[in-house]
Image 1 (cartoon, rainbow, N blue to C red):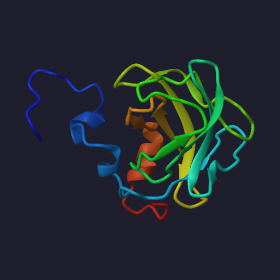
Image 2 (cartoon, rainbow, N blue to C red; image 1 turned 90 degrees about the vertical axis):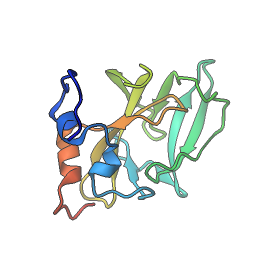
Image 3 (cartoon, rainbow, N blue to C red; image 1 turned 45 degrees about the horizontal axis):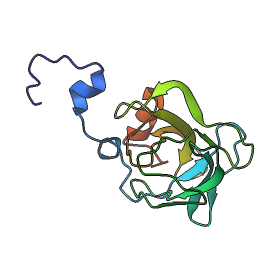
Image 4 (cartoon, one colour; image 1 turned 45 degrees about the vertical axis):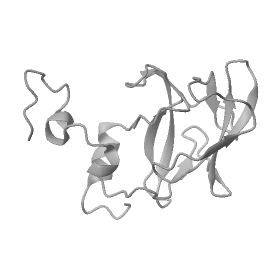
Length: 158
């Protein structure tokens, strides 16, 4: 373990894993296909090899965003103009139109709003993935409970 000076870790994960990305701490490999699900209506968000979300930009325009469901592959397209550094006004499920914004949570990189949805590799265990809604940000996390399920060495899910 590296000497971190006088800085005290805020969570035990920092002490054990320092700042390694979630993907490196788990069994998931870069490029793993993730099935995406709405946490409200449980409808699948994947369509034609993309995860589909309803988005609202800062001008109030409503459109569709299609993003790669492959872990750490950031291909995306949308039907409305969204600047790379723009924080969306809202992101919703395209089926039930319920907001996926996580109230009270902000991105640790740039203090933007976060959205949450469920992911799985198969259809069994669904874990909640929380991501920044700024197009250029790559920050993501999940609950400690879901993180523990993800990194289990004997997990049949991953």
